Length: 229
View 1 (tube, rainbow, N blue to C red):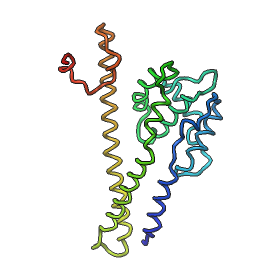
View 2 (cartoon, helix red, strand yellow):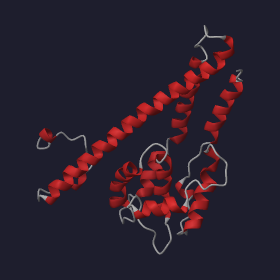
View 3 (cartoon, rainbow, N blue to C red):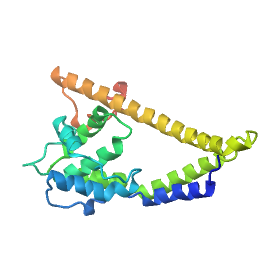
View 4 (tube, rainbow, N blue to C red):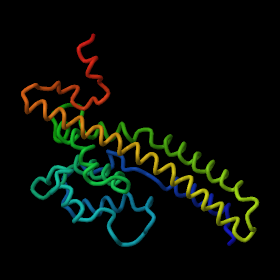
């Protein structure tokens, strides 16, 4: 098997260059019906996907299930506002690596405190801050992927010549897979920690102990140090 490594490398770099996120100012300030939401998501995110088929990236059924299971607030008179769309975009990026209950646990504090909030700080501010360094982050990830790819091409020099290309590409895929696997485990560990902390806080509130709203989701606070100044 002969693989054009230069073409593959250029293809990977081009894929990174096509990646883009939806800026808050690009989201309509008017409320949208379901068909408008799915069309908007599809138009703006399709370029960075693997498949260019006619299937919607986020279907009506998916969005209805998110609302039904309280992952996002229900639509208002069958319409979705800008904050709905910001949440759906975040869900879109999470759903390929996390289960829906994990996504719900991550978003619950944000939805409860900031959705349709009268506070000056809201979901749009959270979204904007998360994505503001996107270009720099993608550049770093691209550099790391290219580095792993070039390292893979130095392996299997003693393998049969007919299998060498394939084994090098397989080595590259395994390196990427290990990276994804480890990071996914880290995310799941964080979600589990947040979930357990929230259960403890809920149990305290039911028992009448109360809880500081500011520290509700601060899982780094050591119980022994809470009273220290």
